[in-house]
Structure formats: structure tokens, C-alpha cells
Image (cartoon, rainbow, N blue to C red; front, side, top):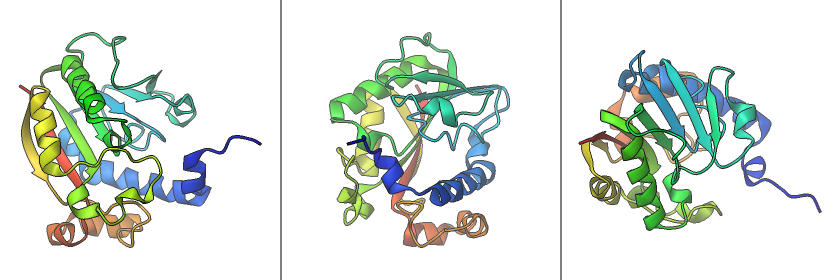
Length: 217
């Protein structure tokens, strides 16, 4: 029997195309403000490369354990297949900004998460930043375990503690930012997402994912 990929089951081709359009808006309208043109940026657990393909900067890296990441990365994106817990192929203090979206809930343990955070801290330049977009178990507890590959539940407070243990200084915490998944009722189109990003009140009503910014102390 041929092996079935979990993400092929979870997202149809049309849903993947819709996600791509939403990520383009999210990068242009929100995430780009954290990224300078001269930055070297790394996307941890890049998956379909929806962030790293759309962010504008000098150098872009996609890291994922799945070899298929090479298929999804744009030609200008450099790809490394491996885990975020071991990025010895990158020198110390070589990256300006790291990004992790819906990554840490897939790690097998909190010890593995802490190991990855310390590795990110090592590769970041002084003052470099880590952006974390992550399901917040405090608000997503009813649906968090609907996904077979979720292992570690984290609230925004637990995420802050982990970052501090790894040597980071947390500079911004939004406990409720985006809805839980792109299958959520809102925002379901680029137009609705643009409107959603401009209305923080909706974040407090519908947000089930945290957004945390931490700087290398």
C-alpha cells in the first residue's frame, strides 16, 4: 500500500493555493515590517515555503526535515533539509531574523523545543529577532488535538518562559492574533485578511494563534 502524506490529506490542491494567497497578504501587510531589506532570514519548518517565498530581504533560507521543501522553495531561496534542533551547518551569529510558524507544536517534547530555541539563539546576530506564530492552547484547546501530528501544547505564557530560558528578551506578545487554521471561518480570502489585520478587535474575538517577537539579548 503506498504511503499517504498527512498534509496531502489535510489540504487539497485548491486549499493550498488559497493558503498561498493568504500568506502573500500576511507577509506584505504585516510580517514585512519586522524584516529589513538587508536582512538574512531563515524560515524554520518552512513546509510549503509560504513565508520565505514572499518575504523581501537580502538572503533567504528554508529549513525543513521533509525533502519536498526543495520543490516548494522559490529559486532564490536556499534550502537545507534537516531539523531546527541542529543547525551546525550555519555559523554562529550569521542570521538577522528567524521565523517559526506552526512549528513547535510538532516537536516531540519541550526539551526538543528548548534545544531548537537555543540553536536559533546561537545563529542569530546580536539584536537579531525570532518571530513565532503558534497555536495558543489557552484559546485553541477545543480543537488543538484535532490534528494527529500535534504533540506539545503551549500557551503564550509558556512560550515566553521557553524563550527566556533560551536567552531571549521578549519584546512583543499578542496572545490572540490569527484564527487557528486557514480552514477557519475568517479570514478566508485576501480581502478579508487585509480587513482582519486592520481590526485588532477581531483578533481578540477570533484569534487562537499567538504572535511573539523575541530578540537575542
